[in-house]
Every structure is written in C-alpha cells, then in structure tokens.
Image (cartoon, rainbow, N blue to C red):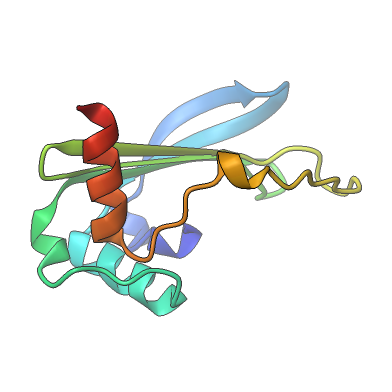
Length: 126
C-alpha cells in the first residue's frame, strides 16, 4: 500500500501528531485512480472490474511516520459509485513477538473480486 504514494511533490505535510504515544509526522496524498488500479492488480490478490479506475472518486491516503521512518498509522479512503470505503491500519510494537489468533470460519467472508465485495457491502447496507 505504501507504494501507492506517488510523486513526492504531491505529498502534503499535514503536521506533527502523536500516535499511540509516538511522535509522528502526518502526510497526505490524493491518489491517482489509474495508479491505484495498477498497484492492486500487481498484487495478484484481487481482480478489478473493467473501468474500475473511472469509478473511483476521492481516493486519499494518509500516512503517519515516526522519526525512524517507520509507518505508525495509515488510512486510505475512496469512493466507488455510491459506496465509500475507508481502511485504517495501525503499526504497533515494532520488534516484539507477534501472536495471531485466526478468526473462526463464521467470522470470515471470502470474496473473489472487488465486484463481489461491493455487492456484499451493498447488500449489507440495505
């Protein structure tokens, strides 16, 4: 996701902020929908529908970086048709052991592509 930040000249410095007791600098960039689509396609994780880039509106990424150049928080939001999707990632406890609990099958919904995800979101909202 960090590769989505394009030309450094397009990155806006929002200011200094504290994230989980760590001093950070908050940056923001408006994302190019075509570049976003290319980055997602290169992951091989999702299949985007034809014309996806033309459907994306107001794609923005915010990144909070500490004085060691480690990301501490990232948010991304974008609109696709009538749906706005916002994602927030927190980066905590660098260097500490990681313990992961796998969710139960009842708590997981699998989707094959972005179209299916959008349809499930649309259904859930109605």
